[in-house]
Length: 397
Ligand code: PEP
Ligand code: MN
Image (tube, rainbow, N blue to C red; front, side):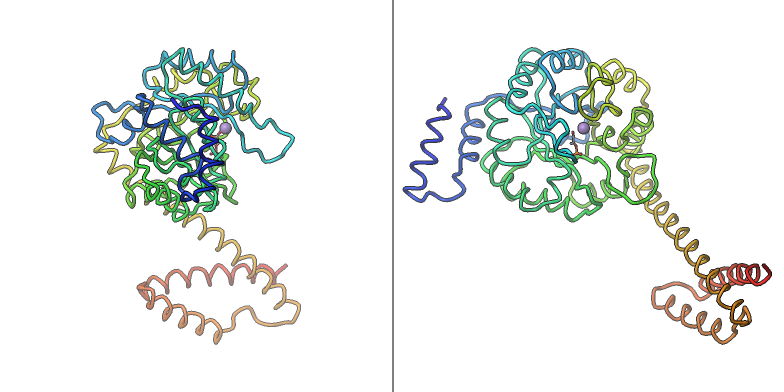
């Protein structure tokens, strides 16, 4: 196989002199050679792509949040390789951290250990890549699949650079949802890789940053991956670790993912989770993973699909209802302030003209939106009544 330095010479010396097209950049050529010379392929993506697998057991993508040391990754990988559902070993090499002083990954040294874990256990390996240089290095160390992190997927420039760097290969790529609940942005990332010729693409649902109070680290908003599946027909792996952010919610969230007919689970596992350098609170041991899997009820994908479709709608309804409640609370708060004003200025609580106008306007607006006048009448009568009660209480105090 061509030596990396020869390739570099070809790319950096010869390409610029003969103005070879930009697509023949270091990474795509290097990756093409890798793809050509390597006979190994990652079976996980193939399994993922086949949503009609006979077994209902989930495919699991497991491993530590970060590769920290040779002992840590080898011990974790050895234990994981004994769990039949585990099809792919993950290990973060470059870690996107909120604060720069946090542990940012072992870099190239970590790849040496990750490759050793693959050699010893036979598990294919995957890591997160955020810039083309990561791809180049990871390919050099026989990484079988990549995932694109949530912070990278938000930036179309970055996604395009990665897609360009991988053009000419068909390495499996797992695309996490962007941090923000933006389905189009997630779909855009798929389209960029598809246009670059990559076909083994899998979505990773890791939840979304959200302003509402929530027991989750990242709010799941299940309706978004469900809609992605409907529109793009791609397999979806649920990254329960980054959704939950703690160990307690992992069991129920993995069951939920299976009930919604998701195609696999990503779970962070560490041989000694409490000592983990990143995401310690959400990691579990391989033994705990075994236990978690044995407590799951595997469902047939067919009935799961009905459940999944309904659950998507239900989850959307829950979100809308929660917004309605917040709006009602805000409206009542404003009513209280109006009551205080009326009290200070000696104005009656009910102003009939204003109330009639509000109701007429809302009925007309509702009709334009396809809502029945009876419904609007009932809803606003109730709201108005509650508002009068509020203001009366203010007057009486
Ligand atoms: C990770 O998988 O370790 C990670 C950093 O995930 P995300 O991009 O979902 O935050
Ligand atoms: Mn993590």
